[in-house]
Amino acid sequence: MSTRIASLCLKCRGAKNLCGKSFCPLMSYWKAVNEVKLPEATELSGSSPPTVFIGRYGYPRVSFSLGVPVGGGDVSLYEDQEKWLEKPLSEILKMRLSVVRGERPVDVRRGDLAEELRLASMSSRPVDVEMSLARKPSLRSILDMYSPPLGPGGPVEKIRVSGEPKISRPVEKMYYSLDVKASDAIMYLYESSVPVNHIQRMLSTGSLGYVFQRRLVPTRWSITAVDSTISLRLVEKVKEYELFSEYLFFQWRHEDNNFVAIIAPREWSYEWIEAWFPHTMWNPTGAVEVEGVYEGYSGRTTYASLGGCYYAARLATAEFMVREKRQGAVLLIREIYEGFFSPIGVWFVRENVRQLFRTRPERYDSLGEVLERLGEATRLPLRVWLEKSRLLKTLQRQELLVYYLYRGGK
Image (cartoon, rainbow, N blue to C red; front, side, top):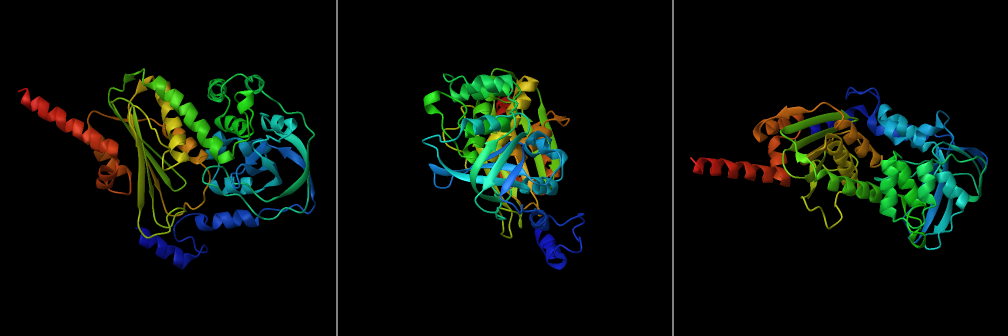
């Protein structure tokens, strides 16, 4: 299958739509880049969504960026990740790459970020800013596997917040609560319905936690820290619930991605498996690459090798179980097909898994039935998942043990 698609790409080269898509996925990034309109002036003014990015290279001396969109449209949508699934990925790319960044070096140890910039970053609506760049921005975008894409940037000499940030009461309370631990502040904001990416932005700009521990945090790290912190707290709550009474099966497809979940009526455990097909962003080879990470009832003691996607998906999974007031053992599978090439950020996983668990589940009485359904739902055959999944192996052993115990009792 992958060889055939690669052959089609060679014959088409983005011009003939041989794959049946209305646009070439491989060309959509470059199309979005070409449509970015670079400002001619070094003086920029406009509404920031607000968009903030803190780099990690050179840590503890890193770069701070404040972004202003130049592409027009509803500026508030530029940071509203919970609505991005309503848009084609090509439109998200175009939107985010039109955010022009003013960059300046900062030292996280000194926390040398003006309070007006922190307050602007906490705003729940776009805030007017003015920036004086040292030179015209260059067409140098930020593509990162953790954070959403960002457009051109240039060194900034001056940033002035000319508008009044709108800061919600929970956000203001945690910002000025200097004796509250960061993890407790994160949960307070989450339980106050503050969006996850807003909380991540606050942690990144050093706006949460004990006063003597507050410092700037690279955006990549803050994203994973917030997803991990919230999901861990939710999982502890999940463990107090009764088990699901049957096997649940979910499936959701979006933008060349296939998301599948199986929830078994067992105590909490969680496994995330990614299958990257050939000619995708992280797999230039000719074979499908499959990797997975597992945690049992007691959780993990090391960082998950698959990084931020693991924690983002765990958050969405725990949210579902809290809503249902039930616990189970969950296997999450993501197949990434040919044509998906851009590192769009872990928001893509978090929001797709949330959407996955909003769909109506199929219900099964036995492991055999749900495994048969899994084999029908994925391009990879069932034997691959049985070989790669630690959770499925455990479930099969338990089924076998029950079978022999039952026979022995007769």
